Image (cartoon, rainbow, N blue to C red; front, side):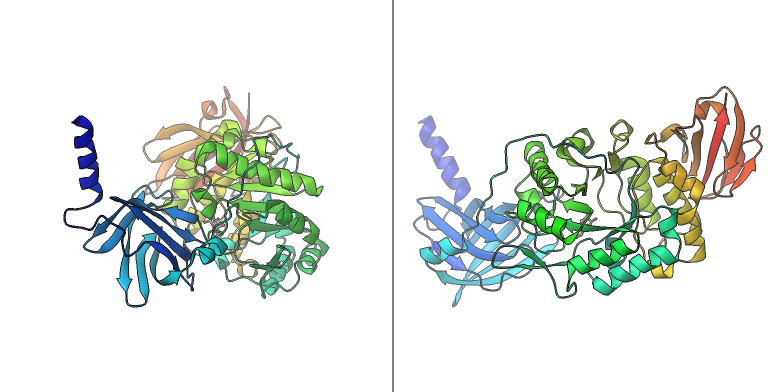
Length: 503
Ligand code: GLA
């Protein structure tokens, strides 16, 4: 009796009263010819048996997306799918309608709306379109190379140009890195982020798109300027901007990047999160690429980008990584920058020579923040031993921004050989005092005013772990200050940065 009741309850929950229980008109294979944007639907497969409808939507980005709780609702096949890591919408409802020509699929994945029409296909066609799952290698630690004794410095294309990049722009950035003096200030890497990829050749080898006619020549050019060059990929089938990812081609892509002459790889989880959704698989997916990079024999910095999930700082080194993103994407506004830099960056104990928490690239020079706010941005990143990857158009750096980016004494704090990530030692409402111990025994102190009005702030010897401060320099003013009165009016959203000696 109990069993019968359960079965009945189940049947009711699956199929609203009055709807057919036999085979549905949706059963079978449906082909989508124009895969379209995210998630790139290629096929729908449906099977029903009694009250149960099962099926999957095959996508280019995420492979087969399984139907959950599939049911007929007024003749419409309705089901839920897992919606990436969107906490607000962990699942989305998708619907399939019958049309004179076949079916119409409507739904949403992440930010992307789906409205695609499919036609009937055969089992053979389904086999041809079937997604080829890849097996991750078993966990094995990757030997980490000491390629980043201090946090990497350079430039990356994403913040300013997004996917609107080409060979000429990258060369121009390399030129500007030299002519502005930024290279000589320590900025070394010219990193191509998402948007360089084309399609794969018949041999499976990734090719750049038409905007990058010759990657090797581009790398040679950047090297000829005394700079290094970086590239970008994902362990998923698609990158975050929808370009070809390394799924199924990890070793081959690592070799291609090495052959082209790249020195740095940012490896971004993106669509890979549909396949690698827990700590074990995410870790192994990074170890797979880490090992592939090592196998090329070329020293390539490995930058992990999985937005700080699964306590990445605890294992970033074990997969061969030298830096790992700890947060979601930065945008060019004070609120986001401050949230990321003050509140969300990874634990200081994970940072040290050859392994750094990465609160994302710089926005200095992109125009969305005031000079005081950009001063906070630069101070905070330097205090955090964060990678300093500029993200603006280097040909158009306003002098005030160049002064922020090129301040040698501030850079020296970021690049200090001890590799210590500074942290807040005192917080009073919206005011924060940060401290970072330096290799020569001196200490960097930062006074941050996160409030909306100017505030008087004082640096104390105890903030630096000293009984008394014997000498102090104001790094932004590039001037010594009297060590006995370290009181400053710090503007709203602004910062003062000091280097102090003490006893
Ligand atoms: C993600 C990363 C960004 C950038 C874009 C490119 O959002 O976090 O830094 O690389 O992808 O699509």
